[in-house]
Amino acid sequence: MRSTILCGMAAFFLAASLACAADEEPPFRRGVNAAGPEFGGAIPGVPNKDYTFNNQKTFDYFAKKGLTVFRVPLKWERLQPALSGDFDAAYLAALKKNIEWAKAAGAKVILDIHNYCRYRVKIGDAWKGCIIEQKIDEQVPVKTADFQDLWKRLSKEFKDESSIYGYGLMNEPHDMGASDWKAISNAVIATIRENKDRTLILVGGLSWSNAADWEKHNGAESWVKDPENRFMYEAHCYFDADNSGSYKKSYADELAKNPDLPEIGRKRLQQFVEWCQKNKVQGFLGEFAAPRDDPRWCEVLENFLQELDKAGFGGTYWAGGIFWGEKYSMSLQPGDNFTTDRPQLAVLLKHMPAAPAAKP
Image (cartoon, rainbow, N blue to C red):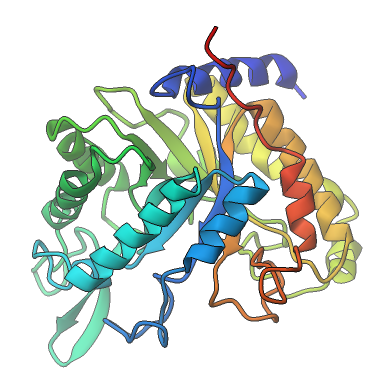
């Protein structure tokens, strides 16, 4: 384990130091993705047909179970229909309602721009998801300045909202070509801090933010430059062979190819944890999940969460949300009108952080 327990203790105290008020904030938070606002390829799309924000019962259910942070995925094009333009009033209002419900339930929210470092623009007669700073026909359709404008506006809206746990800059940057994610992310962080905003910032890594091979794709050293030193690196970790979270093969088929399958989540996470410890930074697992179609996946999830506990890292399970159907085996959304818990929930609830100590 290479002194995992000692390093985990160091990570625990680092997490505590990041809290706004150590006597009010637990050392880390565990929760769930409230998926839905980012769904569907139609843009802008029709609410409750192509996508949906979650209802109050969803926030109440998970908060009462003890999950205290919701990662709310947002589609940039719906929130801001024109680059560097005004926010869509209805989409913003629905987001604020979700934040209100989370706050009323005693939980907090992560604002997650779920766009993979892309924004869809019309080029000629076709729509294309353009990478930030990608050059097309000698033009740059989506600029870093556009991304900065998005977060400047979000910061203006939410920097004084106590129920915002953090800003997820960008979900799963990948295949960036000549675009420099490190420079882009630091430019946006600087914009947020220039607004006198001290909100925690979550910074994803390249190659879909995979915890496994994190150093291979992001380099040996931390790159974030944050004058407030209130940031975490956000990684994602799934347990299927290609680390995609699609779980196309059964547990039996995966086990036949990998006899060490019960330990795969633990080992993949260790790569990210060790990188964070080496760089003296804190990590957060924005997505992780296991299917419910075979109880042995819960053992993999249990081993993963034990490792997450040792590191002292928070995280949000993928995913809850009212739009998931019964066929989506990873869904944590309860069945039978909120009366049937999913089996993964029992595993997750064994690994909640201790409540902060009361003031003397």
